Each structure stands twice: as C-alpha cells, then as structure tokens.
Amino acid sequence: MSYDDVEIEDMEWNDELNAFTYPCPCGDLFQITKAELQLGEEIARCPSCSLYITVIYNQEDFMGKGSDSSKKIEQAGGRAIA
Image (cartoon, rainbow, N blue to C red; front, side, top):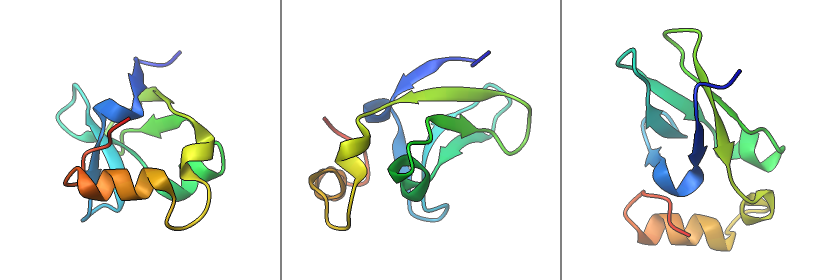
C-alpha cells in the first residue's frame, strides 16, 4: 500500500537527480523521472527505505519533448505547476 497520494504539482523538480522529488519521512526524497511519467509510471520510490508514494498526474502532460508541462515547470523555477 502506498504511503501517500501526492499531486505532481506538490513535487519539486531536482536538476541534480533529474527527477521530481517529494520529502520522505526517513529524511531522503521520493523520486520519479520524466521518462517514468511518460511511460505511465505512477509510483515514486524512496532510495533509502521501503516507502513509496502514488503520484497523481495527467500522463498526456508529459508526452513528447518540449511539452507544455515541461515549459510550465521551467517557468516556475523547477516547481511543477498546473
């Protein structure tokens, strides 16, 4: 069972990890990449513990390079926005 359901808008883009991240209770970060989102993946995992979250997002927003979603994220300073 997922630790939590998190909207993509509540996650932050991390250039170093090249992934969307969200704080994990263990102190690390849940992570999911754009490539995983494009494939329809909705589970962001923490690399330091066994917890994972379900990411709520519209897969169509992540299809193709230069998508509107990518532009919105860049304009928001790396933070996902609706």
